[in-house]
Image (cartoon, rainbow, N blue to C red; front, side):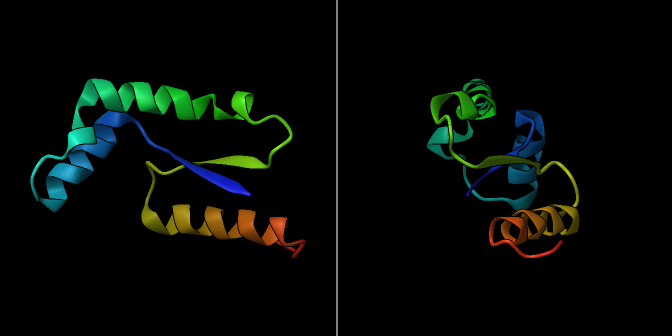
Length: 79
């Protein structure tokens, strides 16, 4: 199971800014857009793999719930 946390580059930039700290090498907005575009199509590069996308632009509690649901399904647990 591969879980991809999808987030708009602008939302990600805002969150990084809010938490403080210095800018890092991958913080460039144009680069974040390219990386995001790749991950949105990652399924194409790994056919047959179990890849799920989770909208991580939402509240952390919602994202956490979705991740746990996907893990439980992958383990064969009832969700």
